[in-house]
Length: 344
Image (cartoon, rainbow, N blue to C red; front, top):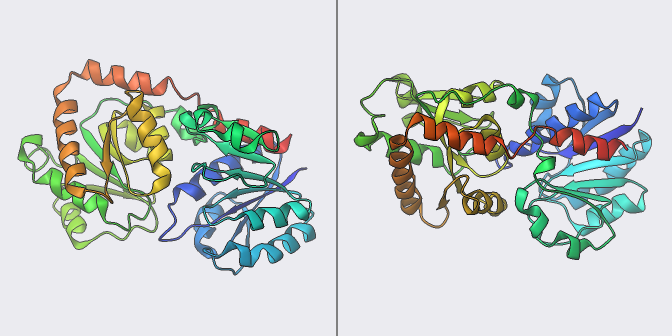
């Protein structure tokens, strides 16, 4: 049985998308007969991996200084006779990967920034635009490249749900939303009476958030009076998405999940690594990009309101047509393809 380690962290700062996609790949590896071990700096990932019955080794290191852990990591891998590792973190360095390589560890790195070439054996970037970012020139023949939408790691549940063009509007701003972007979006929507969310039927506005999200008093008041439904740390994400007619979402893996279900969506960014996905979807006419919240909150919110009026004014048939176009780009086998590459 092939032993494969997955190095990932989760906390109030790191988006939960990292651990969620790592779990998706871990489950695919398990289906392919691999013995998967999760490795983390601290206990932040434990609730996630324990739920899926994966083993977890805690390094007791600083998640933001991964170079300081590499000696202990190598020691653990060698003691457990593990020769392959999958790394999902932005805190890595060339030194980190070189030390793993020097120890005879085969490294697969999931990257979506394309800022520098790392000494890794395999690199994965599942953004559809990844094939045009220059990876081939950057890595030459030194690294096996797995690029493009064929490697989008979606959970199995997203194969089983399709948008029903319901009445809901889904909002998500990442697992922890440390910038309180969801508060600003929801406040703006509820104060735009022409959209019908302030005075219309209750339960039409949905906020999807992760374990580390700490709802404000304002958000809790909206939940209390029925204007907002908060879905926090839930498992039935695809089902929730399928019940909505549209979504406002931060860019990243969530855009691919919404695409798989077929939910018309407008995207925004608040960190650099989200930009490639947001611009790709916008350029292809799949999902409009409303802007960068770090640059201008007001501009993003105004573009959002304009889009909500536009999508609300089209027919159900047109919305479903847009949804079908989104679903066509994803076949749901990305995690299995990554697993096959790792196990092979």
